[in-house]
Image 1 (cartoon, rainbow, N blue to C red):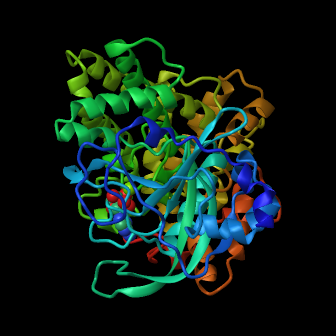
Image 2: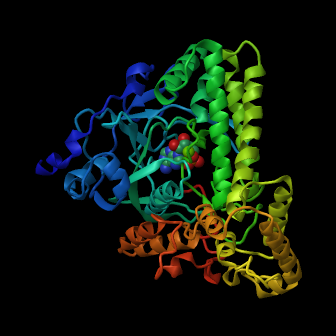
Image 3: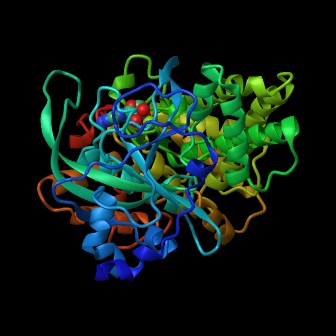
Length: 529
Ligand code: AMP
Ligand code: MG
């Protein structure tokens, strides 16, 4: 109990979602259809031997937890699902969703259990949610658990995204359960026992588009209205007014936040992998890290998700269009609250406008231009085509552009970043086109008002040196599965400062090695996690 005095007990919970919205009268994890309610009380299922493998110190600090608290046995117990703090009131929430383009009905938190909503000293709200904490009414035929490999991926990528400045849910902790979980990773009839884990993820809210779609699909319009009004009150308190005008302002903001998120994913080379409407956050956060991946060689057609290999609906280059499609499903769900469709249509239009503006801003930042002119849109589009054709590493190329002495007198044909090429043959084939693009870029820079140091700094902050490349995460996973979890903290340490050069850590910035090209976990991931 001494450990509890180290700060854990200072967490305060107000659990507004439970207090203000209708819940399921039934409790426990018996699988069921839940109508007329947005949540069901259910406790985490205790695990054999909870052991904390990793903690995000920034997230812990934000919650007021010091190192003594996060190192305690009490912490592992609580965030492994074996104990509750006073004020916690665990529940699973009820939502539906469109999966791969089709309405899937009730889904809900099948393996996520919210422990409670905390309120920080500054009034900021954080919902603490365990992923992999055991069955809930929404687990359908599955076990409510998560394997270590996918939990490491969620833990690392949530925090990496935060440090990259991309809106995201956060991760506080990664706790090994000491129990095995059986998974058929590629759905090929070869199930295997794997170590289990629980991530505590943290966000102001885990509400998804699908939370609004489910009551709408059932004609539960009062419930829908209550949820919308609650969301605005709790999560969008800056929006004022009432009735339809307020709802319209809110939808407009959901659309513009989603647009900015998509532009951020495209800036850093993140592919979500499963952009079903149940995996889109109403706050415009990256949510549900599953079979996601990072772009190595630039390829707008790439998806890491083998479950989506057929249509590649969730390929890198389609993400903005898919987000818009998802917003249209949300608009459809919200339609009963509106007299006519005009405000919803104008929200969808605002998505397009906001996306274009954010994309142009990112173009200017990535190329080190004071502003993005119309010609620059073509400049970057042509670069993207070239990067795809010549298999150029996205992160290394853009970061490499910082170091080209492109404006040095006498250099009218700068050479490209050396380490960004995967295939010498393709490089040779496209050498002339690459040189031509660089000359065009150099010309453009000569016509830009930024000083060289200002340009470099602008580019540095838009083009990360370090991203959690798929193979890096997989190496950490291999080590952890073999009993050495220290790679998690090592990689996280590098990812804390993604825009700094970090001499001595060049290995973490290296392009994908050949062995990782077609290896499961590196280029191929499935929803089995
Ligand atoms: P996802 O594709 O991971 O976003 O999950 C889609 C739905 O399946 C959600 O309702 C999840 O809660 C549920 N789900 C995924 N994995 C499991 C699991 N191991 N146990 C129970 N439910 C799960
Ligand atoms: Mg999900």
